[in-house]
Amino acid sequence: MEIRILRFSKFPHDGYDFQILVKDEFTYVCDFPLFKTEHPGLFITTMKDDRQLFKHKKKIVALDNLLTYVDSKLVYSMRHTKTQVETLYRLFELKRCKLQSDITKNLFTFARLSPEYFAYQYFGSQAILLQLEGKLFTCLNVIQ
Figure 1 (cartoon, rainbow, N blue to C red):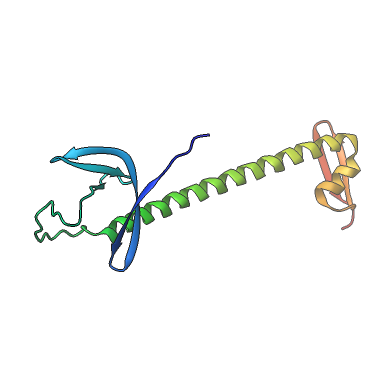
Figure 2 (figure 1 turned 90 degrees about the vertical axis):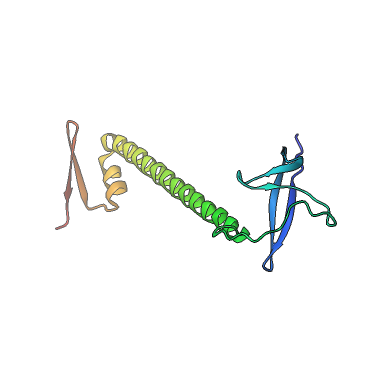
């Protein structure tokens, strides 16, 4: 049994708290370790509070927002879940059709052995007359 320890980093932003999975893999950029996350384009570096590593300057970017990242993850999850549910539904429909086909084949076996039993099981009525003519079954409604 393998035990895995997962590390998450917590980021407060606009009154929301986000947790991002931090992987054990890292790379160095400008002598700073950048840890990979669950998102292929997002890296995390650790720094002490008293040390400012990078110069702060204003930068206007349309999609430079943590909420946009979270929204994209939610959209991906919703689309993935939708396709999985649709695939599962198609699988259930296929299994149901196969089961119905198997039941019908079994009933046709009874048609040769007991035509009355087949007519009652297949049509749900005793007022059906079943005639066998080779491989052909003729069903007649007795009560008009």
